[in-house]
Length: 227
Image 1 (cartoon, one colour):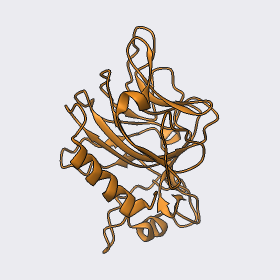
Image 2: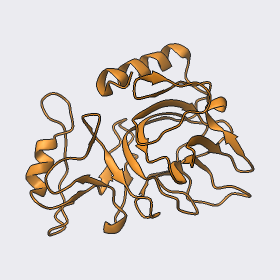
Image 3: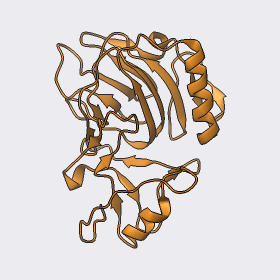
């Protein structure tokens, strides 16, 4: 959606299979560009959408497509407004993501838009910054729960990975169980602040096996050049 006249268009891929950034520039021109729908590429049509103009993440600045490490990314603010919603996925899930948060405030990458008994259900970054997976009853150290891998700007991270403004890749197993239904949204807001470039969610998995995980990491790194 360009904000000059609120005209919307679908953006696909170019001949190389990349996001067609030229088509974004042609559509938006000197206007800012915002994402109404982030289309599910799995074939399940579980698209992440936002119909409210002021809650749509930005993709174009009026002169250029927003990028991180040379690849396009959606820019989310931290006002609790920029959020995309999709149909709740079955849990547990395995999540792979490429993103970069500001690291200075509470930020939610994935969440559920219903309250829990004590904590909001979310995969979030807290000041410090460290990453947590909030369960329905108590916050959990997300990385240690994950048995996963994380890389930040070229280096593999052990322990609890910090995000900062750098580009972060991680593989995450959502145990304890959370059924996600939103990008950058949680019940008490605290939207994501930073860029999100890719989210891959496997439903009904207790963490995919090491071979598949390694293959996913290799494929993502080939494209995003993280490590």
